[in-house]
Image (cartoon, rainbow, N blue to C red):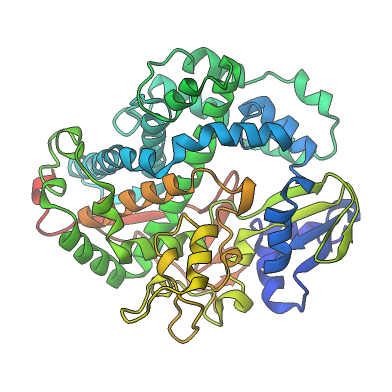
Length: 495
């Protein structure tokens, strides 16, 4: 059985996260899964560069995974391979350009304000300041994806039982049956999936025909490169990927805010100093009335907020593990890899590598992303910026100084969005959305745990990380996280 029992009983990526720091390796790990099937975990910078950049199309997603997920999402950018992937990515890149993303900041900010406003109203009405984070954040991120992806306000924050929200949950919400099918997908023949009801048809009936505006879907339509079926596939891909991952990242953000009250105060102070007052008051009015002129620079100049978000994404990558299969005989750093070999990429492990991040790799320290005032950019930091454009501080980051803890010396130390031609096309979108959500939340609420969280001796034990259970499905989230919120003094006009 190899390591199968440990793999299925611990959070995804957790065994590799421990092996990477406790077992000598040359950038690759070989381990055995179910029925002693071989797995190669890629954890070294040079090996990652080969798999993700230099030989990216030698390694494809497992065929069973593509067939199973494709029956739900269709074969959009996430599942396409080879020349088809290159074509789709090339046509979709304009939708994720900086110019287009900065135009979405008002939508990010208005929905972030709406989340805080509606939650404050809910607390006032019920008298219960204990909040289920996953529920509220999930509604907010679904609203943001609706506006930014196809220009439609789902109003899930206000009306969580709306038609499109229900449709989305029917399509993508995991249950025991879908989890069992996910496990069986590696043993069932591809034709089996086509015997099952295709839930993407449900999405086509309910989502097709929405009014076009200036959003990602509209830009894809304007390119003329996609059929109606392709457009639905892309829409389903962005809904699933964008909603789940940001919900997880925001849940982890709130978790760390609860653990670190001083961080809350520092971010709040920075927001007060950098974001114009008109965007922080009069929350009882419709956010669109005072958010439509919100600028990307209002958030981007909050350097500690950006550092906080980067550290959340480093320590708690929403997608802890992803798989590839060698499409042909190839090699990784001189090691022969036969066709059909399963390759494991684990941001959950690489992002906490002591070799790449130093002895404090397991600690939550936003300061590692900040540049000392006297440090100037170097050629190395320019290279890092090109390979990791989603990080606002990348262009200013010096080589790794473990005493000052200023960030990694290689972009492959930060694997949350992967790298190369298969990197996450929406990483700038995700960073901007998360920063807006965190800023609005911290400005509106002081947040603490609703119940005590036990700290592990070394931060990780028995499926727990830093005292909270890690629940993995599509993404990795803090399980059962409930917090106690209190309006920040001075923001009484928010409700």
